[in-house]
Structures are given as C-alpha cells and as structure tokens.
Length: 124
Image (tube, rainbow, N blue to C red):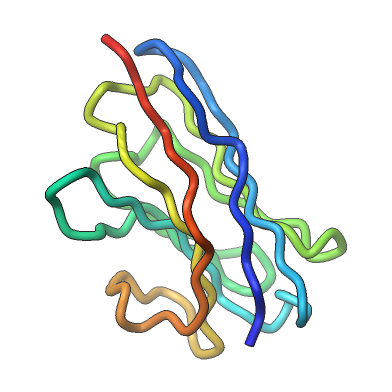
C-alpha cells in the first residue's frame, strides 16, 4: 500500500487561505484515485474532494465547492488541497486518502490508504 503524510494545516482567520499537501511514498500515486476528507470533533469523517489518477476529473462536497481546489502532481507523488475563503465551520482534522479503483468515491470506507491527518482551525 501507499503511505501518505499530510502537511500544511494550521490556524487561520476566517476568509484566509491554506494549502494542504499529501506526500506519498512506497508506491507512485499515478495509479490511484485520491481524496480529501475531514473530521470535526464529535462528528463523523466527511468527504471534501476527490480527484482521478490524471487530475482531469474532480468532485467536491457542496459545502466547499467554489472555495477549495484539489489537484495533484504525479511527478512529485503529491496531492494538494487549496482552501480559500475559509470559514469557522471548515475547522477539522483533514485527511488524505488513496483508492486503487475507479475514482469518484465519497464514502471513507471505499479508500484503502490514509494519512495521519493535519489540523485546520479557522477563527472567526
């Protein structure tokens, strides 16, 4: 399986931006569909965005559409999540995930590999 490590989280004011990175090792991510999920305290892990192996197809949760952008650089074995216009309700631990099958899955149980998460806190 591929190993994933997230970075880039932190504390930001509402309206600000952050870019999360997901660095992969062990295997090339070019054969994987990838996704971002988040989990707020006391809540279930929820889908944020997903991207196909080449980056030509993406899908977003309605709550982040127009504000977040998922993209990948297979040459660097890294995936990213650019988050703009952040809101306090975006506060959560953010996780990247990989899936060795067709892209588009929004259920966390459909992903095979996970990172350890990076914390994002948006202050009002």
